[in-house]
Length: 145
Image (cartoon, rainbow, N blue to C red):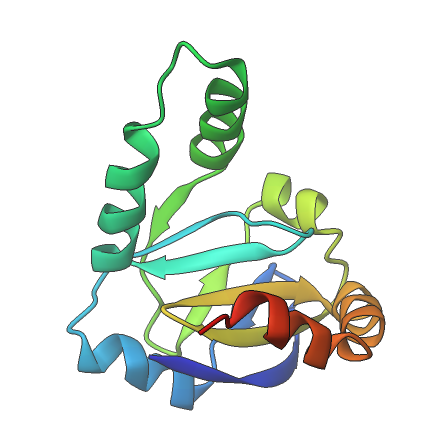
């Protein structure tokens, strides 16, 4: 499981360090491969292989006869990259995903239970500032008894 918020800078080769605390989550699940793809709200999603396979199973069941399902699957899967963290715990962010997430240099890596999200620092701050004021309202709507 992944929790927390970590700020990092991308190196000149386009790599970001996944914090040790988050890498431990992958290690605890014996994850060797991760999948990086376009996320929602302008971030990137990072899934360990078991979670990726679970999401893949759900999304492949979306009927291809529905245009919205086709569009979502095309965008989600066409952006996906299978990779491994290097020995220093870094991920190389491909150009098309950096462009999608508007990542230039500074990033925020957020643990969201079963996945990581990678945000351009400015976009995360914007999301956080606009969302935190409604946190209680969100809780009431989402966490119904």
